Image (cartoon, rainbow, N blue to C red; front, side, top):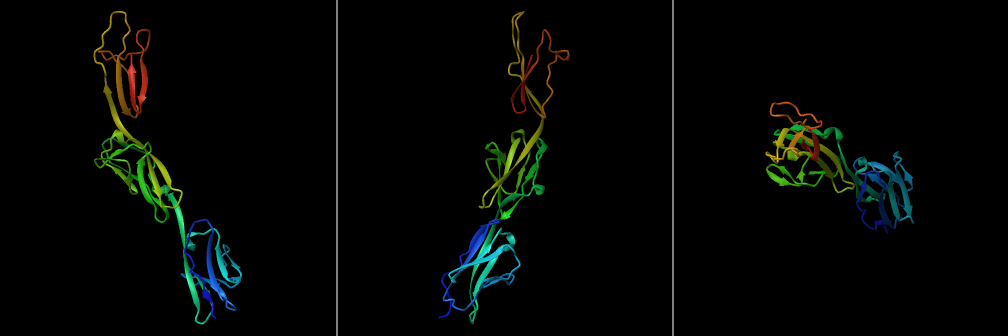
Length: 263
């Protein structure tokens, strides 16, 4: 009775850097020999009990002269491909199995945007490129989870390697996350800060304040700007008001790039 393969060689999927094991089970081997071959290069890896390849990451084990195992340590992408287990009958008998090597995503820093400062009303494009196998899927979102205006719509996520915002506004200011994933853990992200420059805006909650002679009075003015503005009060003659015995200036930060000044 000639040798026969008891079962197919299962395809194996391994993350790069891990160890892989390919199994070949042969019944009725008798005096015949088993060999492992890398199919794409036609490289003989082992013949029966002997390792032929010079690759130090490859080893062989067997069990009861029936199960033959090809071990590949610290799997690399170059190991991806078809492997054949063959028996030296005439004609030769063989089975093959595929070793899939997957690579978790990583962001390519020199091809990815860094923190950016732009003027309000201009267009801005953020770029994020990632590598991995399978090819990673890239998406963008704000770090704070808030929706943002994108092409006239309020969105929470934008797919793709580029995020282009036309006529950027101060509302777009904040941290954005580029997230790359391909089903191989872990996913990875990069934080990119978008800062939008805009001129100061003033608002006065109460334009008319009244008080009796001798009473204290507080005048309030709200300003918003980026970069932060220099704020001060003047008299109707244009003289700057300096804090002293009569006047006291106070600046209070109430929100990002928004201030209240009092005197």
